[in-house]
Image 1: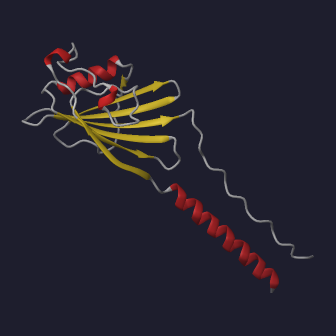
Image 2 (image 1 turned 60 degrees about the horizontal axis):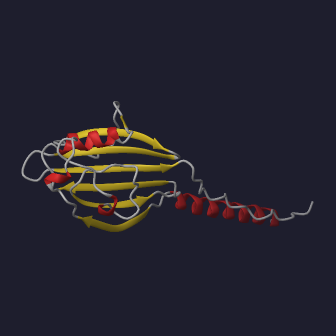
Image 3 (image 1 turned 90 degrees about the vertical axis):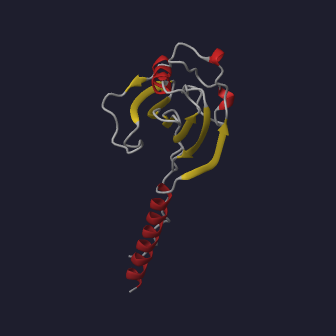
Length: 187
């Protein structure tokens, strides 16, 4: 009878550890701090990229990757951290822009070394009336996937950026928990 108790205790420990590990992988840590920063849209700030220029680093949320060019305007955004720390997702909305800013935002990304993803993604990030464009890029050990959702028709043009940042040079995978030693069941 003590053999069955020992096996039951081991199974209970294994199940408890399995549930704890499974629970760790499904949680996402959110950085709910949103930042909103107006930037200059003076005519003297415009370049050849469709009447708009890249926003400067000071106008972007703290910690935003400087490798990703964002169009100049009123920028609001936040980030979410993935469960293992190697993935960060940024979501920005840029308003206070011209009707041709969607094309200019695409040109900024292409000029910044990103390539157009012609196959697109299956994510429902954009509204039905948005113009969508997808980009990929790699800078040193960081991979980027970027989706632009441009809605520049109407009185309030805006562009939404959805940016996944994957740091392939970073390894923060927690070690697997060790099991306690098996009891000596005598023999």
